Image: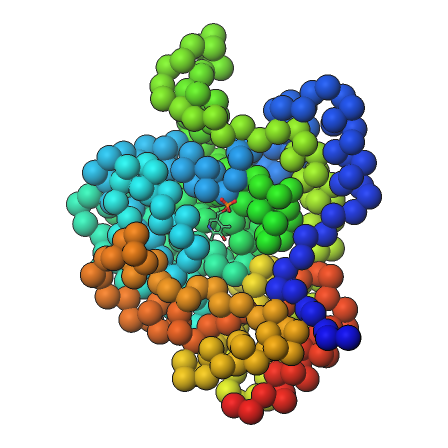
Length: 363
Ligand SMILES: *Cc1c(COP(=O)(O)O)cnc(C)c1O
């Protein structure tokens, strides 16, 4: 039988099924007590004062930009190498995404290039903590302070990641998380916004619910959307949260095993992890020469190893943006990267199979 090792796999057990059943039997199936409990637990996890649940990571990013005061005509600096929503959320806020290059070794936004992209109109930056490792928030926070910019962390791939012992989602002015099926914990579709700023939290809560204000007796005070999470999703996530630490540890140990066994292959560049970071490996992303990348990915897929390319095109070159800005590092990475399976359900045998398949490749 041909081996089939998937790039990601949701882990849903009896606990999640029972929790959903309890919600369905309770009659309270929209946003209710499960969502409130989830928000409290999530805020605690991130060491943030507030957490606000939304429908998905994209709506969390959109809500956060609104709550941070981003408006039409503002510029927001985003990395050119990320998932599309890191940039489209800026369009949702009617502002302009300004594409910035990334670092060749960490794949994360390059603080030096951020400095070059700042104009009088710049109001915020959105570092994406790509593949599970935080961006260089020490440098970015310094730049933001100097130029009076807000920082929205795109933490969609980095729940439980840390920098200097501090959690992703508590490193900037606000953080946005996703619980899509490929993320480190999931409920199918879901999102979360974190912040330590009370005003941002209040504005985000109102925006999530049609602009309805709790503070002034439930008036519709401002424009808003319906971005509410349901108790069905929250019940799944409350179970997932209990297992987050175990999931994270397994991802890290899988990654360490891959690193140990691939480090002697000179056609591969392994992910760079500095000491002050805790990388949670939503993806295990390596680089190979662009001349062999596509051939290598096809070879692995034929062997039943579901390697995938995140991301094959930098955001500024998508048909949506067609932006003439030059980001040479991001443009190069799009041709060199591929991600290998690293999820918690991989067995030792699976990992050895992946390692052997890679070793057998005729580079
Ligand atoms: C998944 C993801 C998003 C979007 O989250 P959704 O829940 O799919 O809307 C945004 N940014 C990054 C970096 C992501 O990985």
